[in-house]
Amino acid sequence: METMEQKHRILSKTLKRLKQKEHLPQELTSLLGQTAELQLAARKNISIQLPDLDLAGLTSQVTRGDSFLTPATLPLDRSHIATLFSQLTDKITHEPSGLPEAMVTAARQIRTGLKDNTLDLDKAVDESLNGPGPTMKKWAEQTPEAPAALNFLVRAALEPSLSAAVTALVEWLGQNGVNTTIRQTATCPVCGNLPYILELKEKEGFRFAVCSLCRHEYRIRRLACPVCDNSDTKTLKFFTVPEEPGFRVETCDQCKTYTKTIDFRNLDRKPFPSLNDLESLTLDFLATEQGYSRATLSVWGI
Image (cartoon, rainbow, N blue to C red; front, side, top):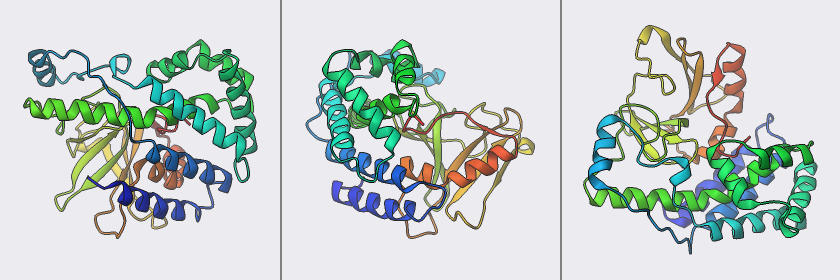
């Protein structure tokens, strides 16, 4: 587990590489960098109250391959989310230089909506967790130049609270002998969502998944599609490109999806998955050209 200082150092190095990527507008890189810095700084003073949990029931859920919770039952610090959401919108609107103009305009509208109560942040949070609803639809229509702006801001504000919730839950489960680190299927054992990116670790190349919602990391089977669980090796392939060292794309001909994998084992690099996902965007283009689709959005909601 990295210290906060180490995480900031990894973020800084990752952002430096992102700025060298021609496929990413500098305005977007600046927005993501500032947002990630705020998220790291906000990982303190978060209050998580775990729900009443039935240990015997949870053990049974593990056996069945179910998740411990659902997106709707994840314990969150709503007050912390609201504070970080305000900090994000304030920073974008007060320091717009170098940021995407459409996002700045949308953030101003969203900030006004928050102040005059035409934006219900709690409902927006619920919809970001459980699927788009009327609140997200309304604000996508009101910010047509940046329709994903509200979802981006909500997902960004959620991240530290989700991380704290997952850490608290996993620690409690571990203390009570429930294993959350190894999974036969690729759905997240905490919230049931699919991973948005994979990572190979250690000399043996153990395969880890990173949840697209709560960002929990857990080990999964090496030879199986993380989307449909297909294990027919004749229909499972992967490819790499010299221009993107440390990344590979794994494809499944059964469900026609692809998932990117981080493999920094032979490189002097540390992963920052949410940004590595965008850093390797050229691989998404190549996979799409070959007829494969992605099963999840990035954790940024875009």
